[in-house]
Image (tube, rainbow, N blue to C red; front, side, top):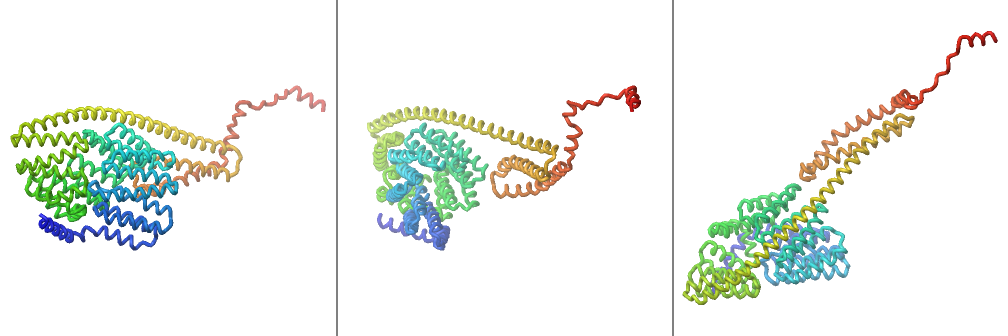
Length: 600
């Protein structure tokens, strides 16, 4: 067996060397770019991107090394802000669930270092982000109680945080932690709070992320249709604002839920067009698992793996043991249990010591299934018993019921009806508890739906209030502009200086045309999906048309006012004369005129 393992390992290394040039080009480009930079701040940011890429390709040790180098550069610079950037780099958030325990422990230590440093500077936003990341890492490792403690510690700093984005992120992680603990109603309330904040600041990425959280929650609650609808909402939002990365993530999760090849192809196509190398790899990885699990075609899966060396490289980078387990899965799903068992057994011993109980349970089950297909009943029972022990330790009722069913069937095949009856009884017991859990899950789903309907109504009312407020403001602006022009005409009826008339005319038309631009602006953002280049070009055309029109109308109005025709009209149509006409003198009588003449 050891000799076989050595031969297989050498074959892996050989394949690794063949595909290494294709795989590492992106990483080498990033590394060369970072080395060329001289500015500490630019170098720290570039190294963070490089670490993120290493984590994406499962090169965890190299990523750790880059993060340490990044921190040393920031530390030597003696710049507190740069040190905080290094300590709170996003790369550690991208650790895969298929990662060895020691890598996670190093990541936890790194985050803890960041929290301690932020506390010395009283940087509350960074402290809260540190606790949020700690909750994220602990949750991924299944340490849910510790994760909730850290999420609540982050929440405790909320009143000291000004950034709404960070507040939303804290509530998202709190919701994720509640959902990991199967407390869906509390998770939903946290997501809704986060969504309110993200909606208020118009953050499309955060709103999209929350839709994904809801989708994951509904999937776990057993309602994939609603989960799919949440992702559709996210996709519509990202399309509206042309947020490419968000659309890639939408298609990725739609592929996971629906197992439709179309969505996987969309992930790869869109990620390639946007040059998102990490997500191109994620899409290709998904395609490999589609051939393996959905189509259950080992030949197609292996052919795809040979044609995509970067996918092969990523699986290999987790370690030769993981690579062997993956090969075992390919043959197991392809109904070739003898080949599957060969790879599983090669990986088993060291794999268990490296990846912990949760992943160990998976390989034990796969070995048991292989033995079952090969009709080696005692060996299959032995491995199912090991699965059962781990499931009981994790208090996983669903897996206990499932494993008990398998054991009952195997004992019955073996002719041991007593043991078959015992495991049938155990299976029924756990299925009954699962039925109660299912009822509780249905109640939780109803509560979540009620919470979401309530939240949707509150959002609708808030939007209605906002729209009414906008309409009132538009009406007020319209009345104000109308009043300005009327006032301008009234002023023109009085003897005022030409400079005053010109100034008031200029300001009146500025107000009018800026209001027109304001009205057009909302329409432009909707039509162009907020693309700056398109908006800029359209506005240039509009301004080119409107400026001459504004100057022409302004010139004619000012010329009319300066002509003093309004002043003349005011003199002719004087309301005072109409209301109080002047009295005419009484006519002189002819007799009186004669008397006056005689007197003379």
